[in-house]
Image (cartoon, rainbow, N blue to C red; front, top):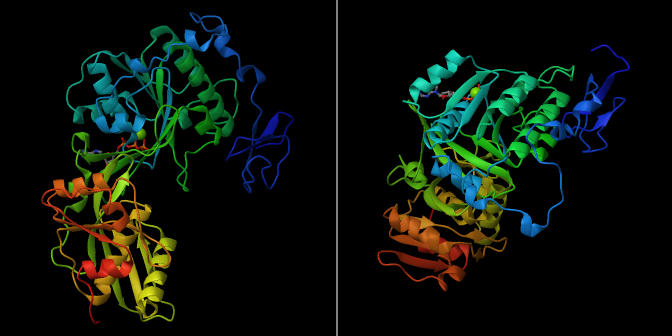
Length: 462
Ligand SMILES: Nc1ncnc2c1ncn2[C@@H]1O[C@H](COP(=O)(O)OP(=O)(O)OP(=O)(O)O)[C@@H](O)[C@H]1O
Ligand SMILES: [Mg+2]
């Protein structure tokens, strides 16, 4: 880009503006993050809401005068999505949906549009990426559409602003923010200033008219939404749609939510007819678990308020390298090293002569400490080549001295296991005192990793 008076430099990470290039951003300390772009005209920066027709003048209000409108929350037709949103869509909110290319963002939002329109909402789907024909092709996969749902192929924010102001829909989808541009900003769509200005316009529309706007955002190689970080600050809710390319399930994760918890996840499965909710993820995750195999353990992780059973697989074999190999798929690599060190030190097992591989089957990524005990018993099971009873579930955090520490929501984990036909549960002794043993489930409380190995029937010679 030619250097001129009217160009400025923006930090790609945080949107920091500078008149000269800098190696390190003073705002967020990121290195080499400045790009040169034409300066945004000052007129677009703020105050546009004041000119919008039909908006009340700005008058200060007391808390008593303000209506929360919490009762106005409405469902999306997907229980999984509603839970991630904290109970449904809040009118006037701005939601950012990020995710890898082709993961199913447009599919999810089109299905949400379908459900909302069928529930009587006025919905406008604006695509800057696909033609109406392509949208129709996708819609054909999903069955029949009813209600007030309209589509628009447009990338100019000024035109979009006009259409929204005139039609006043309840919900708008913008697919995607990186394709939108504002005339006054001369840089290319997707640039820092364009993304920031476009989001600003959408923010004013959302807050001004009480329209809920879903914005699709592409993610960068590092897995964060492309564009300045300020984009995430400007919106009310940030959701990430993620999944393994090889697996058909997708996970929707809340990263930021001004109206609810960010612990919850929603699980979906991509199929012929679009996305379907996975109401019982545990059953889904345990599908295909091998019978009578050593190194396989069923553990339980809490994702928000929901327990999910999953299979941990470990493979321990003699190493052919000077430095033994360790691989952790779906869990934290450093945590695996730490757990191996505890086994080595506290139990005298010789993992330094072995390669160790751990995998969370199904492609889930979990970092919860409650999986520690499961990972360790899977390693020990593979080390001794002895299987653990397949109807046993295991959870507990393990400390550096080999003690098994309490975990949260033990009762929920136990009842989830009971629901799926498990009859034995190895859990922290501290949790046991506060649990009533449910019928059909044998609870074995353990205080140390040594007790746990005993309880799992793994004592033995290699
Ligand atoms: N007929 C089909 N049956 C099953 N799955 C399909 C079918 N057609 C498309 N898909 C799935 O839908 C995905 C595309 O979804 P979608 O276009 O919603 O993704 P996206 O996240 O919006 O992508 P982009 O980043 O390109 O906008 C494909 O990767 C594929 O997995
Ligand atoms: Mg798309």
